[in-house]
Length: 393
Image 1 (cartoon, rainbow, N blue to C red):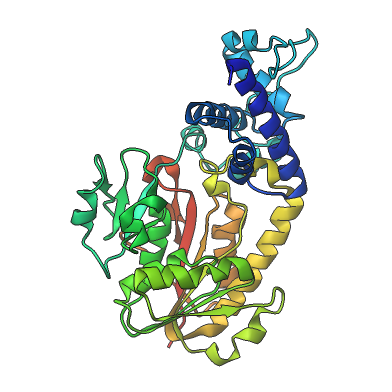
Image 2: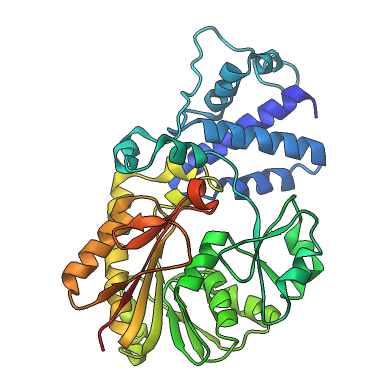
């Protein structure tokens, strides 16, 4: 592909990303994969260059741009040399008109600025970067030091027993260690949340929003594959991915339970007052994952945030009902918004004044109303809020 054709390909992909953000469609990464699947002629260098252009343009535009062309014209504003590639050549973009406006540069939508005012400029700037690639070593099968030896430049993550940060890009899912269930891709922050649960062998743990089961697998390893984990979710397709992952990892203590959205409690009456630990890793805005999914900024609206916070409150209440006396509710969101983090903790404490917020030592982060706020700047993780609340005996 010519350099101009790469520019036009980036424009075409971003047009799809903009439409998907507006209409709640597929994520940018899925759209990029689909685009290249339909264009086998694009070589590896073309794909890398186009992907870099797409994500550079997405990261630059805090507000959802009018079009892919406007987003890429923003890159031209920063690097005028790119403007020469708008030459009207075959498969290239049309020349730039004098009255064309590039998408304005920015980190986040204007309506969110006040809601993130508790973060510093350095915090916000760190959210613009690229996320590292972290692994969790399955300690049921392997030793972390042995795994690190297989990846040049890899380093142990200091606050977890099984975390590894890779020093270079690796096709992890094609690696023999992954195929044998010895490693999983998992952000350091997610591993710290599993660690915050402090689950031990023999415990009954309920993962109320398990998704595809990444944290459930981490919990199973921490429990030495002894006890019971009930992994719940309302998304059948995501939950179905857990069983093959557990089999590959040699985990046998996880049972899946499909919930009915809006009537989640109907599927768990046998668990009321029984669990040692209930993890509510709740659906959220995803503001903590902007390094990985920068187009998520374009998806979030005030109305959607309101719906999410109502759901989070409801799931916390349901989760609390499953905790046995002396047990713990661990609440987590991959968000840096106070509405989804410490304000939810304040609300829960007001409704459950006899429950005690437990200090979370050893997971890093900064204090956030009794919980911990992990940030890309301070912790090198995705952004997370996590709190542990104990039911009285």
